[in-house]
Length: 327
Image (tube, rainbow, N blue to C red):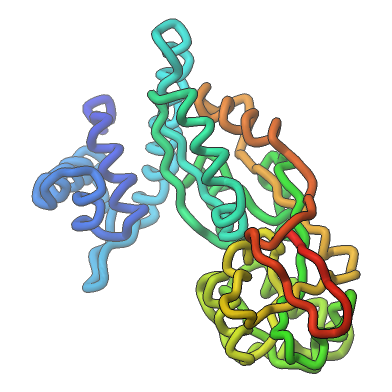
């Protein structure tokens, strides 16, 4: 096999096809005609001497030979990015392309502001950010599908290097007329007799909640699953159930008009103080730009704070002023 004839553009397109499971979507992502992508793939298969993709009605999937090439292609492209980053130190500013997988909590909390601050200092760096569950984040880092992951440390992180990122607090969101709304604090087990609103059935939070309930001989009564924390607050406001969610993630969505208020009640369980982490495959093997971003994120590691919920007052109908809380 004359593998030295494989060019980098073909490798990049092959990786895009595998990640998108579609030649058409890969072509759109790489700003090239689908026919040109197909020709590149066919040329690769001729050079390798084996089929690299299985073609189906719904798209394409890598064959065993394709999986092997995908692994090496990612390593080659990552090495080139690292070389570019190392050499960029001798030019006018750091350059590079950073891929990040992050869980929804980090994306809706502070990550956008931190990325913005980083990119304003390093305008030559490009960042691709994708939302995934915590388990998918770790798997993506371990498999080389992404450079940096941000997730809840409740998932198995044995195959990656982990650095502290942020703490947040898991709280209960209730309508002011809910039977538990007058509580100053709650234990998770106290919520299990009531309908709940859930987010992402395949998320780490969902898995943890089900396990914790099973340990108490109970189940979580998920009445509805929604895809965003904004929808969570809307469902609670409609009195369809309570929700257990990260304090900062519900943030501005806890704001309520015309005196119609939600209650934010802390959980007393130790796991409710949640730790978010940055994970990488190998820190010392990262390109310069990626290492700098990891350092930037970890340097800004803070614990939770208190204040207002997205700037909104949380009403108290249980006697006295509840005050304000930060979500």
